[in-house]
Each structure stands twice: as structure tokens, then as C-alpha cells.
Length: 428
Image (cartoon, rainbow, N blue to C red; front, side):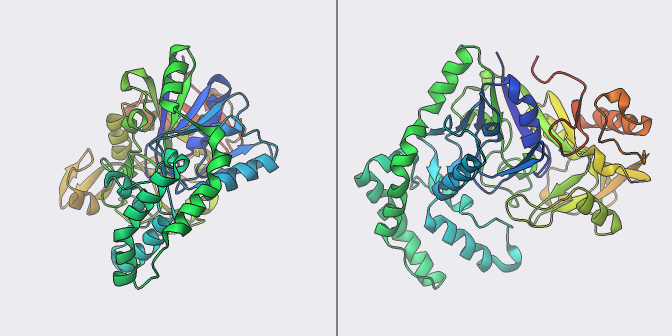
């Protein structure tokens, strides 16, 4: 049975939660394999809207086992806030599994994230200030705290002492902030240990056994391809691998167990934070897309930057991830437009680029070359088959499919759970 990866094909916020929910009744496990509570999924079920940040969106589907993999950095306070909020709304959260090897975000990670970003001034990356980057930096520097360390107080204290040796010098001498006490961190982390204990597991082994037992495992990526630390618009990226390759390293499941890669792409483009964005709009069209698509961050509430669909970015995502299927979301946001431009290539100082430039400076200076498509000026939120869509909407989807490198297997036509048109089965 398949291992299926879901990733974002742009700069995030494409609607991955909805795609996970679409598959929910057919899958057995949903695994979050990267990121932390800097990303958010919004899932609409009936009249209920759920905003998830750290938890995999599969936690909302009955019968699914949600897993936080080893590639995630976990803020324990946020974890239990989310679990309590869902429990209060009648959601069963008892099946959650958390990797013993996942790293923990501490108070000093959050503090360093905020003060460093302020210190950078105009050179800010645009982080959420939630300690994600510093936690990953500690992981790579081999001074991180892992979930399993909470169950050996001596080891935990030694690791916190080692981490704070340098960090307190940085906080006090560079940023003029107070030093953080070791006991303060240790006591805070131990406060969560017993409540967390029933959830902690060797999740890599559990997922391996699930696949051997012919269970369907869905790997849910946070952020998106263009925010991947290796393959995104560096340095304006997240601190983890948000592409399909990260599913293997972030879960402990071998790459050859992954059978399908589903990439989520909006019918236009958005991003949050600093960095190059060739199709970005600063006019009434941008205001229309932002307001109609409600493009405000699930986690931060920040206005998203908006632009037209970028086909070279979609092709790049298809290639990097090995995409087998695209899910096109928010097609309904375009309902009111007379014409819809699509970026088909870039102009960089008079040179045409049909693919993303490998040089970041070229991408930063890229001017989009557009092809325009006629709008349909009809409400499509009630459509449930491809034939139901207006002819111009069908033509738009088929044009995007041709220029994006993989088939478009499903189309989101509204915020509701059932507001989707399925063209090809995403599992079989």
C-alpha cells in the first residue's frame, strides 16, 4: 500500500490541510515531517473552522493516527494548547504519536529568534519569531534538546547547561537581554514530561510496520517547496526540508516506501515574509485576490503578498519533488475576473528564462512574461465535476496543467470540505 507525500508547490498557504482532509477517510496515518508551529493549516468541516499549527491536520479525521515525526521541532506549550482546544470542541486527540527523536523548542529559542530578527533590521528574514530557526540550528550544532531527554533529568540539565553557556553570553553582551537560568528551562520542560509520555514512541518503527501491514501513510509537509532550506529562495526560507525528500529524513521511512507525491498549488500565488516574488501585485488586482481569497496568515494574521500564477515555479516544484499529481486550490477566488494573467517565463535584463534561474540574483530581478486567459465570471463553488465548470475555467485548468509539469488531479472550488472537483484518484 502506498506512502503518499503532500507538499506545497509555492511559498506555502496553498491549502495542504484541505488536501489531507480530502484523503482522510482512506488513510491510516498522517505524519508531519518538518517545521514547527510556524506554519498553519486551516480546515473547514461543515460550519466549523479549525486552525492547526503544530498538529498534522489528519488529527481531525476519525480513525486516522496523527504522527509528529523526528524532523519536527516541538513547542510543548503550543502542543498542549492545541490539544486542549481540540478536545474542548469534541475532537478525539488520544491517538497522537510523537517521535522520541523530535527536537524541542525552548524559551531561549523563542527569545533568540525575536531579538536576532529585530537586530537584522532591513535584512530581516521574516520569521514568525517562534524559535523554529534557532531550534534547528541547535539540532545541526548538536546542542539540541530532544523529546527523549525529558525522561532523564540529568541528561536534560547537562544539555540545557551546554546550550546556555554560549547563548547567555550572546543575549547579555550583544543583545543587552537578561541571562536565562538553567533551572527555569529544565523546570518548564519537565512540567510537560508525564502528560507527554503516553504519546512518545519510536514513530519510525511504527510507520515502517504500518506500511508492511498495508496501511496507507500520508506524509504532510509544512511550508512549501520555495521555502525549503536547500531548494527554496535562500536565505528567505524556512529552516527545514519542506520538499518530498524531507518526508524520508523527517519520518525515518525509507524513500522507496513513497509511491506518490501530491503537490498543492493555488490558482494564483502568495507568500509571507521577505524575499523575491516575480509576479507580486501592488495594485487593485492584488487587493482583490487578497480580500477575496482571505490571504491572511493562519498563524500570524499577517497580510500575505499576492501575485498571479507562476508556471516556472510550478514546473520547478514538479521536478524537485517528483510530483505525480497537483491539487489546484482556490480556483473560485478568480470567479470575478475578466482576464487572468499567468506567468509563463521571465525576462532578466533582456534574456528570457523559461525555467527558474539558478542564480538567486537573476530570480530577484526577474520580470514576469505573461499570457492572458479569459475569465468565466460565474460562481463555481457549487461545481462538483470538471464538466460542471464553465468552459473558460476548464481551459484555464488545462492550460496550467500543460505548463506545470504534472497532471492536475483535483481542484478546490470553495472553502467547504466538499467543495472540490476530483479528476483523478489520488490514491489508486
